[in-house]
Image (cartoon, rainbow, N blue to C red; front, side, top):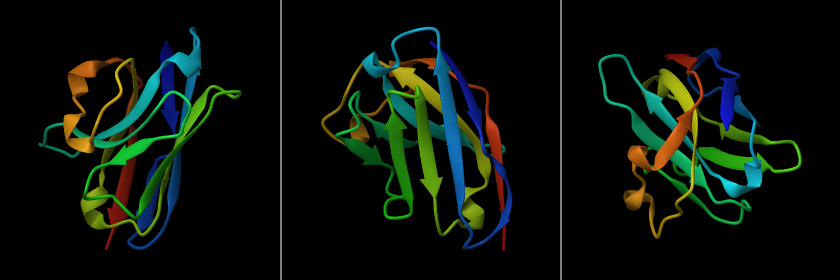
Length: 126
């Protein structure tokens, strides 16, 4: 599956952004979708993941309660709604697809996600 992320931008602390990930080339509903982020000089980290049907989702503790992951299997898209953005959320955000689901957020592994979109930059100013 090919993935293309979009929706990044420069915002002020407290603002919202909605990232989108458009998928093509395979049956979207057979993939778990995830969002990850990588700040400058840091390792890529897990943000959120959603199951094949969208019935389950996991979040990193740092974004829980502020970010919401969703998907529309009819439109082959996944979204990350980001509210109450903080300067610490500044990073390149990547969407990715995988096959495995998890028992908890701490089980999520980057290596489980085989396809990645290009990053979309989110910059949050204080």
